Length: 91
Picture: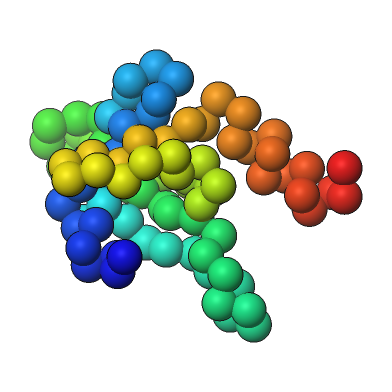
């Protein structure tokens, strides 16, 4: 699947049902040496007006993506960060 095919899909966290953002606004991180995708970076806004917006980001490890559907991408962030960082620490 190409990233362009994921465009427009809403990202939903499986654990709490929170809407994390839209794939159209995301960036992809990857290892330039190996080409392995590291994750998605989604900007999120907390206000309706851009002037009052609290710009933050959600970093979603690629391992946290559980299902890509027609309209949504389901991610599981409950233990994703623990699994992601344990691979780097050698645990």
